[in-house]
Image (cartoon, rainbow, N blue to C red; front, side, top):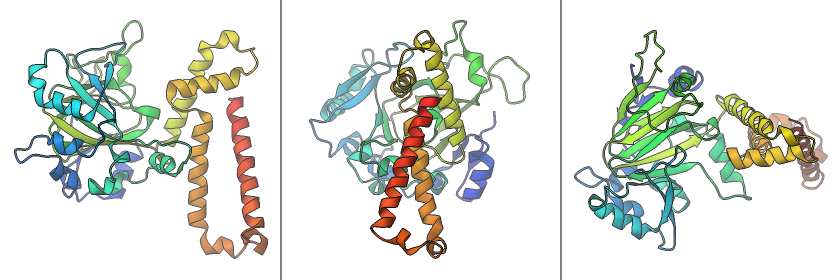
Length: 360
């Protein structure tokens, strides 16, 4: 299937209209990241991964979660924790252990310990990012959806769709990856008779773009250094490192896919309710379903509503400006009454959202 590739001449409007809004996949040329410091800092003169530079500055008492790509348990790679020096030692001596372990450092919150601007600048095409903006604002949790992946040749990520049904973007800083991407619905053609998706589809056959076939349609392509992949909401994909690789990846949500995210969350809650239907008469069942949803999906209705409230209030304040101020009574603008009113209103909205969440 033809791979749509955007260049530096492609505007944000081009991307928004043709890919972001209709939820279609595309690849960006390496011009998009040509000035990223990470491409220089993490690449050796011979074009391979500078693993020492990547791990530099991390405390030895820190723990890195790595996946063993030689093994599969319940459709996923089992993980183990290593110190930075242990992973560095593994990387340097891995050719002696390739038959034993193939370790992939994934979902690494690298930029909690390093200033992102020293390594990259988020391309404007991906800059409307409610998810990371919201988590950066929060004080109750220390989390983000900005990751670094580092893995030797042969490491891979099993077939999956991204967390929350978010968008994701992935820039290959060093090395070459191979992707298999399926438009929404095509993954159903991969289901087993038990209704399970296979973790690895590399030995499967796929249909061409316009072919009338029961085979799933799939985009298969290689991603080279500096190129960025836009992964739309709900697109299942599998990724293989053809060489030693390092990539920067973000998950993100904005106005274009928030409805898809919400629909997915509602479907997950329906599944939770179905699985606990035999105890639905138990007091507190609705609240318990929300707790199960958070444990299973990573968040629940209350947290999703908080995200929407943050976006609404932050944009409302920015867009209102002086025009609104001129129409408000002076008491609404005073540091005392105005602030108190705002806090009461915020509390009321939180209460309503909480009640709403319990009712679904």
